[in-house]
Amino acid sequence: MKRILSGMQPTYQLHLGNYLGALKNWVDLQNAEPENENLYCVVDMHAITMPYDRDSLAKATREIAAAYIAAGIDPKKSAIFAQSSVGDLHGELMWLLATMTQIGKLNRMTQFKDKAGKNAEKAGLGLYAYPVLMAADILIYNATHVPVGEDQKQHLELARDIAATFNHRYEKEFFTLPEPMIMGAATRVMSLRDGSQKMSKSAESDMSRINLTDTPEMIADKIKRAKTDPNPLPDSVEGLEGRPEAANLITIYAAMNNQTKEQVIAEFAGKQFSEFKPKLSDLTVEKIAPITARMRELLADQTEIDAILKDGAEKARLVAEPILTEVKDIMGFWSLK
Ligand code: AQP
Image (tube, rainbow, N blue to C red; front, side, top):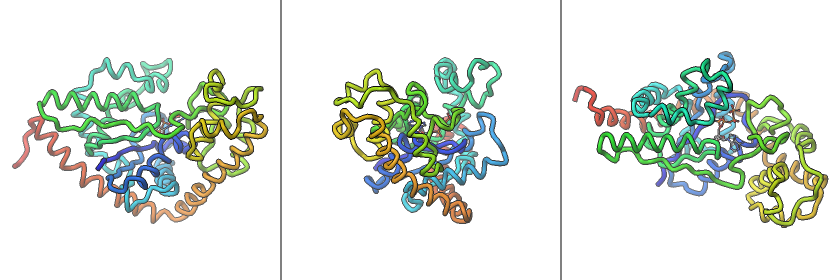
């Protein structure tokens, strides 16, 4: 049995990269391996590491939870919860782990460099310490597997490193080293405007991404205008080399249709984008529209979402509390026994 944990930030809207790189894989895993224990959180404490709107945070948290459920995460099979509702435990473990995290390793984190930009001196400590909180999010449940997109690989490696340091320092194989699960055909979905940039919530142009809340018309329009090159589609995957935008669209099609890139290429070899793009639009709408519709239904009455988040937090707390108690015990803290 695996204990699976993952999360998404309630910042802006979820997009196709979040869906194909992470959420869809969570659903596939939940359904393919019913014996697993699944914990899916909305990482709202991470979302405040960048400027955010406090009036929208709770709403955005419900929206992400709604997206999880609408995509197929079943609250009976998976705990769905807000990180902050178990924040005392995540936060306390983070502090303990921070004492065994080397600054040199944090300095190598590319997400911090990307998000802090040129003005790193003015960035908040929270943004810098983000990977330590992420390690705590995982280790507080002693999760065995973490399904994420490729961009989170470096943070996962740090979490494994911190877990190993703890085990070594306290001479006990206490933490399982969490395995990253980077799954499916679309581990890194790229921007529709620039095949060298990751599709991202915070990118300025809304045309660069497909949001899970986009209407069919918006999806069709964004795909129609997606950047491509003048050549027809190649007849082999190798032919996509040096053609990042074509590779991205083929990858999206493959992931969405549960196919390999080879299978998609076999179907569309030699075809023009004018023929491929409408097919990609239809497929995207077919897969995304039911999720959007279900999200709307769920968000129309927040009582159900709130009950699911409350129940999920209780389940998560039951797993996390004894782990934190044992960590503190191993580290030598006083407690009433
Ligand atoms: N483009 C992507 N392709 C594949 N997977 C992706 N993920 C994000 N972007 C892509 C995966 O989605 C999960 C949740 O991500 P997050 O909410 O923690 O935010 P993020 O990684 O910071 O996503 P964004 O969209 O890029 O947000 P901003 O613009 O705010 O930085 C993770 O598993 C991630 O790998």
